Length: 362
Image (tube, rainbow, N blue to C red):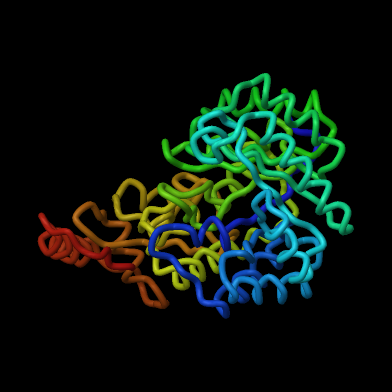
């Protein structure tokens, strides 16, 4: 178990926007950044080299939030210079660690990759800038080289982020890696997961309970290919399944995710955990009966705690309690009779038999 709770590294505005078809407007990014910082993110990620608009955005964010903004830069002096000219007092430099990326993408060898990375870290620091480092494709790197690389830079960086670039890890291997890094190296350790195998949230939760200092992700889980770890899910798993109270405003989660959905154009699945509109929707008669007696029977946590709401829906699987709850809403009259309930229930079931439809909220 981690001795302290991790900080949130939000990459919705950078990695989230790299999802195919997504392009946030600048005003939407500024609105999201404000909400994300109010929520309690420790670090926020942007990439000024992408465009002139992104540079201007970086400048506004750095002016407002200082070194809580850590713009992402390739291991190139030009990228670092641009971030500094935008007012950055902290940057995240990234370079790959796996042989596949080093050889096939950069066309260099391991030694040259390490030399260039150290040179750019030193270059940024010589300008008075704090440096975080992200090891792209860390989880497919040769283990010996991985250790050599982190050992070489640990005294120069604020944190080293393990990037599970193609979602290669499992929760078990994530935990083993984070515990090893925390034992062996002095810098803070962050974890950045992709969701190619559907394990990004589980891996990120395991990283946190294994001692990671930062957990990285996006709100709603948007991101390249299959996306990133969904921060709303990570936060709730840590709170309710591991007893880790993060220094965040949980009640903002639904609002932030709704804002991401609207700004990105990527609609959430109705059954999306935590913030989906069906996350606390109940239609089955057994479930409705239970949740009306005690919400904890079929709700893992209070929907209001994340800004969501309970919905009692009418449909094919509804029971008498759902009909009764509808008839009693806002009424101080006597309870409906059994015959009335049975008649209405038969109509509801007949209307919804064999139909795919939007659930009717009671």
